Image 1 (cartoon, helix red, strand yellow):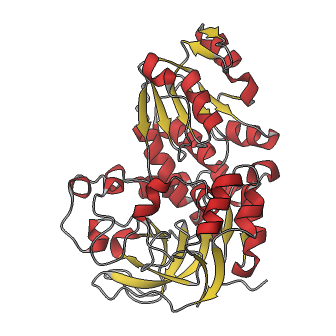
Image 2 (cartoon, one colour; image 1 turned 180 degrees about the vertical axis):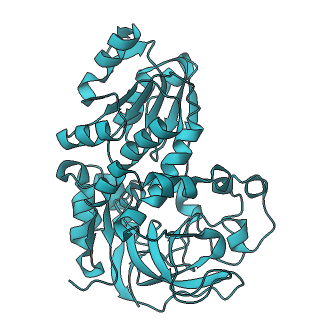
Image 3 (tube, helix red, strand yellow; image 1 turned 90 degrees about the horizontal axis):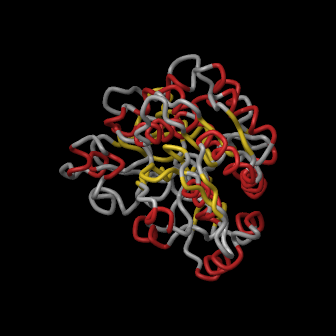
Length: 395
């Protein structure tokens, strides 16, 4: 089968660490540790596993960070190279999988839990917190925190992959593939909204208006009692999308503190040789980007004792505010079975505003991977919510 494969390359990894943040487009294309290859289709010959044919597979911010060398080395122990990326997947079953017949269209919950690995449930999995699985390096398949980071399972950036029944969620009749590809990232947003612990009437700041921030905004509005939701957006079209998905107001990065100060009565201070911050602020802030700037914006705009939710994979940042203002820092990774996140997400993507978003999904064949990755790096500027690979396409 044809697939894009990430491989180990020390020179390219070093290059990415050195200049990836300044030249992400170049590194995610010509200097990325990624290659188009013809390989055997992955097979896991264990009960509950089945082969799937990929229909669409999204390009996530974590994929771009991995390819441009910006992902923390913390994760190097949680993958098995070489692997086929792609954890946002719409596919159809090539064979029966327990109660699901061949031909069923599914979306994949990518987390490789104890059930998928054929081991006794760890404490996290037993409690339904499957995204906190402690056994993601052992069992029936090689190390991999998710499908798309595991050598044995393959990923959506290939024509076929394999998945366990516990990972599969049936796509309802009438949903387009473009709509279905938004279910997995929306499930992550559902988990973010539930982890944020928003109380009725709380003021919430969402730092970032890419797909993560937009979906988080929508989930916060639909699933919590949030009052004012202020979204930070760089581009004009993001403003319109954020408002359509439930934002009270959308502000540019340079306007955040002024806007929050006006609505909360906070005091703004300007330290020497550093950026300003507030004494006072919002009750909850969600960092939906993971950059140093977005995380520090969230920290600087949150009141003492408030909560900062890390929805994007975080970059190193100044955590002084977290210490001094006793902020609660909450991580939110993937989604959990206990949240019933995929069922909730499937309902949310049927909303008119999200259905409209699905019409902007841009898909590429595998052989145009450099073009696809360049597009994915520029989604904010170009107005695209999601870029995906269609391994069936040859155009």
